[in-house]
Image 1 (cartoon, rainbow, N blue to C red):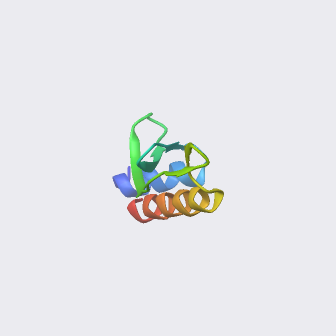
Image 2: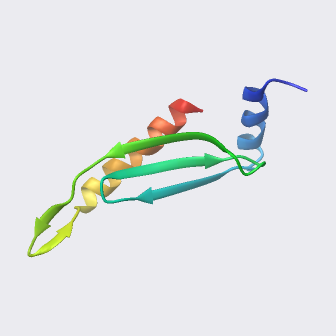
Image 3: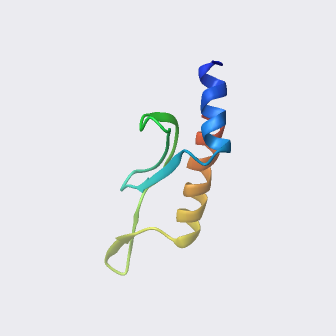
Length: 78
């Protein structure tokens, strides 16, 4: 049967997981969902928007940095 950890590792190897990411106003969140549709790992990155030419926004560099950090933390969680 195997442990929960082995079962999740099998799902990942077999491509039976899905990664979801949300770029929210204060945090980027990453969640890995298993074959049973339940979360198996998550990670997040806090960030702040800034006013640029009258628009609240984020730089492309901040987006990539935050997405990578959230994914890194998810990978460490799983």
